[in-house]
Image (cartoon, helix red, strand yellow):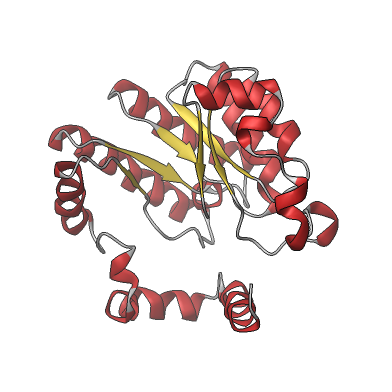
Length: 233
């Protein structure tokens, strides 16, 4: 990564979670280029884009953006948006599922409240034949996110899965742990700035992280059966 890109990434990470920046992004973001990545500011704006992609035989994952919540009432409101989203996917017959950030459901405030919100979304997804993925955030939330994913799976919500960040040293063990139960995983590079002891050195990641097809049996076998998906993130 060249110096310019490193500085740009550092600035974005520093601004993440800033309320003023978030408000400005919501107001001006689509005009400044975010429209390339954001389907719309409302569900009504997003669904035509989803159906357009479906007509091109492209499946879609939908997120309701805005994980920077400050109380559990906001978390409940985000949960309700996801329920609406899942219902709309079903009514439109869209080839789509949803992904969410656990902190948006209240994880930074209350583990049990967050689980209750996520469980309600997982139930709706399961009842409608959809799927919900728990996005992985920065390392303070890694273990809690995995614990929620495991708990959902134990309760029978098998139309759910989570994300593993390949840059973390713990990730191979996490993949072994989760694929043992047959959980659907998405493998990403990882974009958060993490403490150095927790991650592989950037210059050494290609050497130290084995490709999926050369990795240990649980990773490779799951990849072949499409339970693990790779993505750059």
